[in-house]
Image 1 (tube, rainbow, N blue to C red):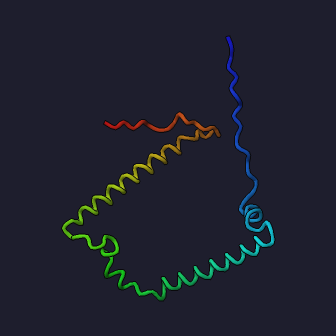
Image 2: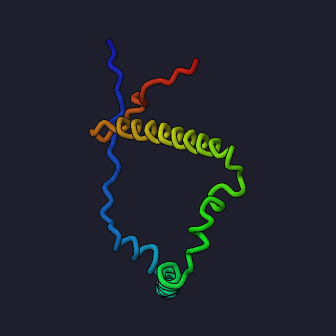
Image 3: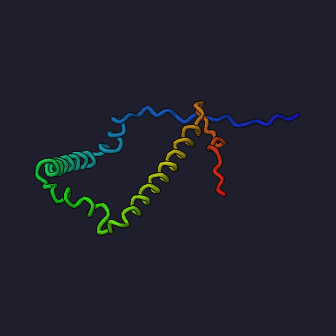
Length: 128
């Protein structure tokens, strides 16, 4: 009787680098990377402050409020608006089912012992 030798499954190496080490390695590895990082961070903060200030204090949102239906569905006829609702419901339902399938598979893909278990892909879906 022969016994098949199965290769030992190794766990992935534990990374000891945290966010600070990542910043040192990727954003400030050379002097010009450090300068570019500081300049880009200053520009992002500057434009973010301008944008948020405009959105919350300076913008006039009355035209948006009065034309909300126009922004959402355009000049779609009121009698046919139920079609938009049905399509939005179908897309939402399909996205929910897809996400539930992905989440269910992800929860069972790793059994907690560090090994990947591909045989646990969830229940088969039979159509027809």
